Length: 143
Image 1: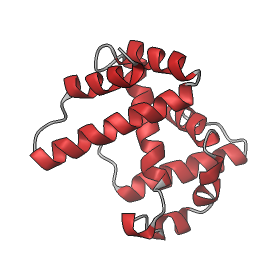
Image 2: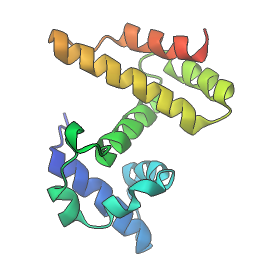
Image 3: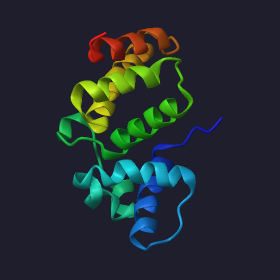
Image 4: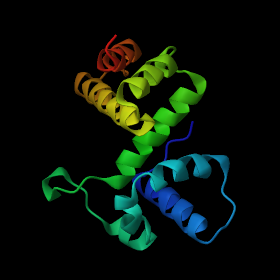
C-alpha cells in the first residue's frame, strides 16, 4: 500500500506543477492532481519551489491553510469518485454539484466531511466510518 510521507506529497505536487509549466508529459495521477492545482491559483506560489515547500510550516497557529493537505484531499476524493467508493459517493457528489451548480464547491463540501471523518477516526482510534462519511455528504446534498 502506498503511504507517502509529508515530503513525498509536497514533492509530488511541486513536481506536477513544474512539469506542467515546462510542458512535460504527466502521469495519469499527476494529470488528475493538476486539474485541482489549476483550480487553486492561490497555491501556485507554494508549488513553485520544492525546497521552500519542504521547509514551509503550515501549523494551525500560523494561520495558513496547508495547500498540500487541501490538494491531497481533492485528489483522494477524485479517486473515490472514480471508483464510487464508498458506494454511493458518486451519486451524492452529483447531487451536491447540482445543488451548488459547481463541482468544485461540491468537492469542498466533501472535503469538510472527509476531514470530520478522519478527525473522528483518529480521536476514537478506529478506522474511518464510511457510512457516516457518506451520510455527511448526503446531508449536505439535501437528501
